[in-house]
Image 1 (cartoon, rainbow, N blue to C red):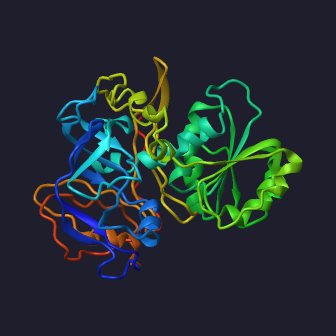
Image 2: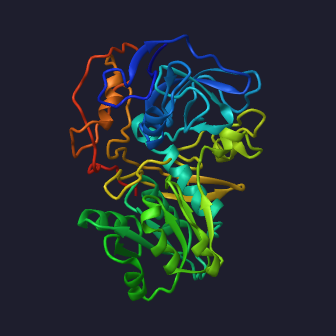
Length: 406
């Protein structure tokens, strides 16, 4: 199979930062699906691993994929050959930047029929991250009953923030305060459901106090946590909760003690890294498939739990992943009518399959290079790959985001 690999951490401008390579076909283990990949997306995790982890041999990156099942391990239940599936993958295994990928069926579900491959590939990592932070780390109760909870989303206009706002607005009664700077960002987060917007460039405490909504009970810190940490602690209510997804080099949490505040890390790969007992929450619990020994589920009309991942990490970062709503069914949470956009500042763009055209290693490299484009593009992913360069694309913002289906 053809794949895009990296062999050692190199600057993305280096001609061998990412390399096209022919590898042996992936083979499924007992619990695996073998998926022919139709679309992938590029996330911060790709950038971090490629730039900072020396592999023992050629390593295939890529987390977030959509494809069609070609074969299955003997322990897999609930899926069939020909099923169209989506997933965020496992950082301990070969990624999705290849024609074929073996992936644990427990973290896979059926892809929504309402979305194209490129649209669906933009969702898993950001949406799973947002869902887990809101309902598993914070344990905010779903429902529209009276609530005194106030949620501050710092870095709200990025990928995770865009999903988090929508989930909170549609499924909970929390008051949502988003941080944003540019007028476009303010309009974006307001349209997603934020009740209030504060400027991250000015002191946060005074702005939030002026809103009259009460102290902040939950903070989702999605970018530059160390930069804003002291402000966040001071504006939080006693017994409040702060969750973060970024990687501050140091974080002194002692100031949180006087208010009995708690801090939570969110990493959606934790379940697959540690093979946790509830690992199937990323797949079978969505009703999208049974996984290995899990409960089966019929293919649906665009419904599946958890949409997507960890994309935008800055205010100038990715713009999207649109979410239409969630409903409970038989105890399984399902996301309905997912609609999305892919994009991100040198970080993320979905690639869709098309007839007869190749994808190149440069298609991945260019997402980190300096040329900019305001629009979202999809690049075909097909077997006839080569390493010739195509036009560079870096997305500081996505303006052609798919809108929620009404």
